[in-house]
Length: 103
Image (cartoon, rainbow, N blue to C red):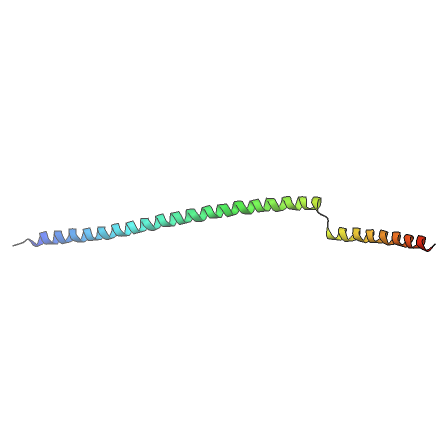
């Protein structure tokens, strides 16, 4: 006849093994999730750093362009004023030529 204590001990070992197997499976799943999240966060961090560097470069380019723009180009209002002055001078010249022609 089998000893009931032996079966109880075997049952306890079997339950512990199943419990450890479940814990191992859960532990492996948790490690896998941690690794995936770590890699994903590393990629997001790298992408954010690249964006930050690009924004800084664009800001410096924009400030440099703001400095260089008045040196190379004329403002629209200044252009209009200059053209108006040239037209006035040309009209005076044409008036003088018309007066000379009439004499």
